[in-house]
Image (cartoon, rainbow, N blue to C red; front, top):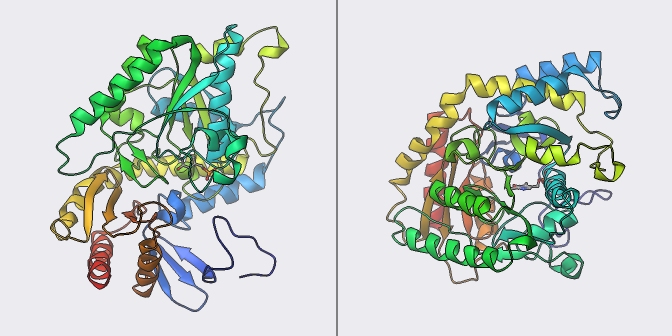
Amino acid sequence: MHPHIWYPFTQAKTSPPPLKVKSARGIWLELEDGRKIMDCISSWWVNIHGHSHPKIAEAIYRQAQELEQVIFAGFTHQPAETLAEKLVKQLPEGLNRVFFSDNGSTAVEVGLKMAYQYWVNLSQQRQKFIAFEGAYHGDTFGAMSVGSRSIFSQVFSNMLFEVDFSPFPETYIGDTSIEEKEEVILTRLKEKLNQNPQEYAGIIIEPLVQGAGGMRMCRVEFLRKLQQLVEQFDTLLIFDEVMTGFGRTGDWFSCIKSQVTPDIICLSKGITGGFLPLSVTICSEKIYDTFYSDDPIKTLYHGHSYTANPLGCAAALASLELMVENQSKFSSMEAKHLQHFEILQDNSKIEKLRVTGTIAAMNIVNKQESGYLNQVGLQIREKALEKGLLLRPLGNVLYIMPPYCITDEELSMVYRGIYEILKSI
Ligand SMILES: *Cc1c(COP(=O)(O)O)cnc(C)c1O
């Protein structure tokens, strides 16, 4: 470990030293010692077009020579305006107002604040959010509060605000009881909302795929029924698409794929193609209207030093163009994953094979308790590196989430690698 760096999510005492990356291009990382590693997880899910894409690099360079940063209150700039317009065009009708920040956790914080203050601005006190078991929404206090209680937030549990958690209807290939599971969950949610409809500020969900909680997937049908409940009981729906946005689920966004329009959507990770930190929280006009007032207390008092950084916006605009050019790549990846599943299907070491768009996942069967601390993940991580693959299982959940530029041959290499790793554990 470096004597002056404190690494994230890392127990320095027990972790192997980090690998030093010298450069990266496309799907390949090149280490200082010359080794080449295939980035099968898009470097924590951000790098949708592969590394060092010249088009995004060029856009940042050009923007840096014009305007690198400017205060975003009382001043505005073209990259932010163009980006806001383009994002609104890609999203379902009605998601209209774009609030900028610079990472996924703050995009969620802003979404929670918007929802909470929406009711305050309407002179209602709504104290609670509904969230889902297994959810991960980030590491700041609000985001931790709506996240499933886990080792990540355990130390701070007394500091978190109270949230009602609902089970998440996770499904997988060959799941025969999913309709029943959804019915039970929806009925319980309905009862909860019915008991005290004025209590809930909103429902927050990672639509279609829960990321850090273990790549748990649900059906579009569930999201549609959830939205009906939200409408029936007049609360707000927040989609945390920080991970699922920008092509990950095979369509531009989960809300497009499921044809469900939330009141608020949070986007980050893939937004700049993995070049710069940026995020947005986008809400409906209905919400924005309650903040639009002569009364100063109705203002959304939130902002960050680097809000709407022009370099980030320029990177995001270039990334959006690449999304348009490469739409067929992210929309065709689900079928490719499914083809490769054939060699894994009858493998007794795995269960719950599942895929949504570009994301494929499976659970490793072993005797240890499932969850982030399951040691099989570490074992797989090491074996993968020996084969030149960057895989980073979430406990016993092994997943692949490659950049969209991965070739058919490279994807075959990943699956062959996984097949061999499974044989050796
Ligand atoms: C990663 C993630 C976040 C947090 O984003 P950061 O940029 O790491 O703060 C929030 N929600 C979801 C669904 C995520 O996957």
